[in-house]
Length: 261
Image (cartoon, rainbow, N blue to C red):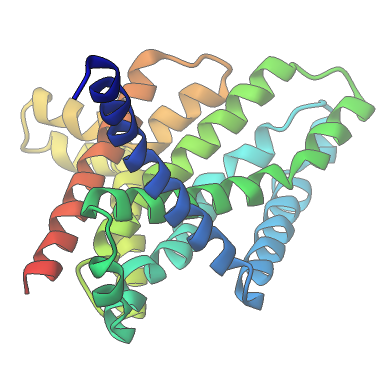
């Protein structure tokens, strides 16, 4: 084998995982829109996000061209809606037995996990992107800080990715979608609430300051609020990236155990 042939073969091998991930992601994303469930989810997300921003968040009463009230409720919306997306990722595969067919395909566990996860994240991103008229609205009504709004959209997308990573990992641990939904929502709720003073005061009664600070640093709210202020700090991105990485690794391990069972 010549050097050129060897180089071409190595290049093909490096491209193969990405191609497999794209194929799986495209297949999964297409399956979302094959049933009315995806459209129902999108309508619910758009309706609730708009209603919470305009009516509960006092968008018009504030007298400011800002989407602060809109993004404020995203964390709480995701607590219910994102687990609804992630619960079917692996639990449905295990229940119907299609997990065995998927594992017989010439793809690695990592490729399968990444493909399904990226499809779910893309679906969440599409739902978030359809709120774009909100951005147009505030620009028509006033002169908002579009840099802050763009940072908030990025933060919301990353937040959704973190919720999905947790939900996907939990979905791989059970065959029951309802159980997967409840456990994912509970886990995301714990990460969300960990930065509130009520929780921190409980830990301050008996825990050292280092543990209190650690618990506070794990809060989704703390990191998301920092991004929605228009400052994309590397520490916030590292937090979300690390959390996604940890739960994706757990997802891969869980699926590998299913293959070996």
